[in-house]
Length: 267
Image (tube, rainbow, N blue to C red; front, top):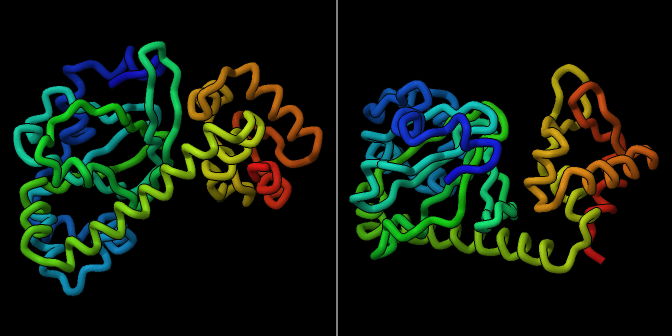
């Protein structure tokens, strides 16, 4: 599970360390994780936050693992011990991750950007074949943290309580609609429209400049869109000439959000 960007620095040996924790994440009791403001915020923003009371939070956070990822690093599953049991639920605590498909020839297609409270592994955690081959990969775009909840605990909660099953069903329906929209864009939108969509989705507030900002390079943006850097450069050049965006060093700042959103509409 590597890319041209990740292969040279994300080996099988380091995967054992980083997927189980960037600096060796702590498998801790629920009370320790509950003291982490980021974990609490991510839980409350996620589909799990809809569950009433704290009993399920305490149960599911028991033996959970918080992992740290540097920008550009892939979530690597090689030799991950929990794959012998129901697949873990992975919850974004902070930062941004990209979920993408990659062809054998190296072409990529981004399905979703994930921020605090977003999750993956839901379908696999309840599948009768939890170790099926994974074609969807995940990459940290900025320094980020993940919370991994043990699969058996989540699966037991789903089987025991209809409220958990309903929350899971609603989240799976939301993900299906998101990824259907991504498929629509990849099939029907032209490249300029897709670049505008990705810039809009990736924009984050810059505490220094105050403008919505994208921190990816043109090559990274090309990988996300599924095109080549030269095309991204040409399209961004047009957006710059229209006064929609500008470069400030390596940062791409959005000057006209409304105009960018118009460029992102599929016609």
